[in-house]
Image 1 (spheres, helix red, strand yellow):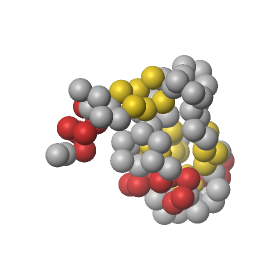
Image 2 (cartoon, rainbow, N blue to C red):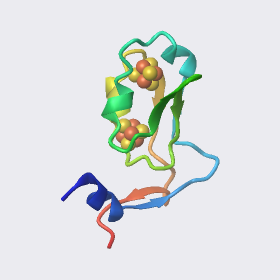
Image 3 (tube, rainbow, N blue to C red):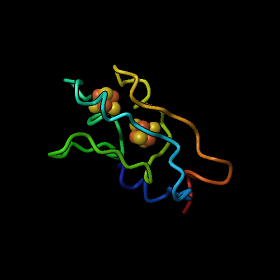
Image 4 (tube, protein in one colour):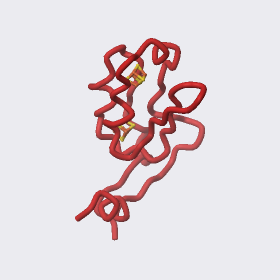
Length: 90
Ligand code: SF4
Ligand code: SF4
């Protein structure tokens, strides 16, 4: 089963306005490898002309970005109860 097929069975309850992850993008400016860009399975991290941009709405809470970030820029928490990702729907 492809990652896209798996994601189609995934339900998100977005806690609008309350990100469970925040990124100190000032630290990203000095990050040469930027492993988050390839490590996040759902591409929450994107490199744009003004630097790394993070969006949390599709996060599957794998925790990879917290581990691979070499500069401690990722402030990671689980979403509040009742919010976040639910696997194996559909
Ligand atoms: S790995 Fe960490 S410091 Fe580097 S670009 Fe990604 S979030 Fe920023
Ligand atoms: S926890 Fe996983 S899915 Fe969520 S932003 Fe980090 S790497 Fe991406």
